[in-house]
Length: 348
Ligand code: G3I
Image 1 (spheres, rainbow, N blue to C red):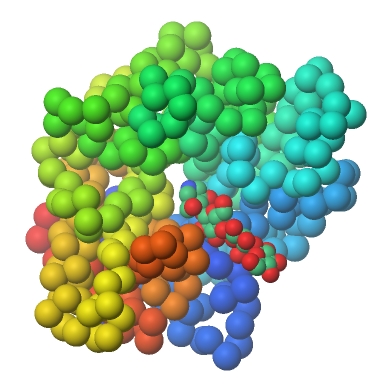
Image 2 (cartoon, rainbow, N blue to C red; image 1 turned 90 degrees about the vertical axis):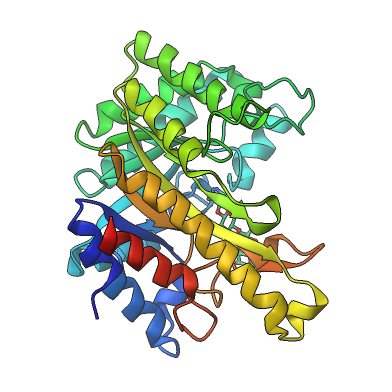
């Protein structure tokens, strides 16, 4: 049985997964660890490289879990995507509290950010293939105001210039890592409806960064999809990738999963309700993977967890409940999405 990683490398495509370090360490759950090493050629830390994990107390870094992942990847001949240097979520409380109560000034905040990027990127220097330097900096149409804008903690306190700064600081600390901007809802372009707008916004941002000689190498398209939103269009996904490539940037799918609503029928095990969802989920995985396979600038295809046993979806989407988002079920049985990915890798 060939693995996803072997089949992917025939196309020079790295197939990856986010890794939950607690699951990886759990000796009662050996299939988790075995599957990560067997099926994937690149790994991303689901949580342990985020700021709150790395520096829970100011000035005291906790490298242990992240270093474990790096060591695991080395043993298994896997590349590592670094996730994430600058994001408004999962920041340590000392930082957000300090800013909110005024004990950390704007000038100090900028120094703290520069220091964080330098410290983290240097710690992992030479071990990270792609860094997600800035994550989810752009608003969505459902935010207020609905006009797309730079959102979140960093833009509010430092202004959007922090994005260029972050890339420059990251490059200085490890000149050989590929530096990515990473976001969701930028998977497609060309529908002619507002779904295009965020892709366009990120395209304009990247173009302006390149014009200003900011060292950005790639765009990470997360790929958190849901079957309730219908099927993505292959041509529109290819068009989004192609536009970024046209700027000279690499691309990657960085967090793919395709969730479904867990209706009463699904929860009761009714195959008439489950099977169409599994099929639609597989179809959307396939649309993203095929677009990536068809574009030589698309370097990797990473799923955000590979088993429904360890997926962020059911804990995050509870009303209505959602799930079934990954390529293996809770018992590590491959689902249609896995088979579909394999077929795409074999026949593309
Ligand atoms: O670490 C604590 C643990 O001590 C505590 O017992 C437990 C109880 O709830 O919570 C643990 O923290 C959780 C953490 O995951 C680690 O499991 C947080 O509550 C939970 O909010 C956190 O969720 C993560 C989420 O990012 C938070 O922002 C998900 O696992 C992770 O999959 C998700 O990943 C993000 C990407 O980084 C960026 N793109 C979107 C993607 C999905 O939201």
